[in-house]
Image (tube, rainbow over all chains, first blue to last red):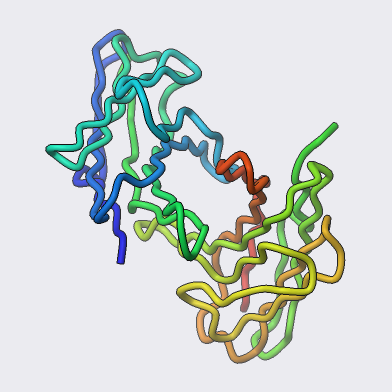
Length: 114
Length: 112
């Protein structure tokens, strides 16, 4: 069965600093990969997705993610964090066969210090 | 506006009562989903439906029921058999060709 691991439960960065959130997946083939962001008490907003092709994908709000097959990773990055980026971030995968529903990691809560 | 509407946003119920959460989408999506979110556990799949009049159990279906009589609607009933129903519930939908799942704003259910 596929699984997604986000090793960091909580990360604190200073405003203006760079950010990298880690995500590892376990799946025999290359899954579809997603990053979502959630503000407290709200639904999830899609930041970016990777299906195939260029392994560096650009998303909204200045985020990008890089797919590395050799490391089974899909880490999310942002060069300069803004206070409004404080939220919870979820990595998710979707298999292209069988059960077509997202499997989520447990999330990483980002805190931004002024 | 196009989107996914969940209602109510907040719901309080006494233990032993069934409660139904509404989810409506006007995106013409074929597939719809229900997820449950608890602190520190990410999102877990309750039920999903890829077509009208058909649905499948997810990872934590016990104590829940759904129906899919119309393409745009996928209500979730939390029954008295659900042992720990207090949680944040998220509905989602997707178009099969797009392979991308979009979420509603969620419903908070508190059972006392």
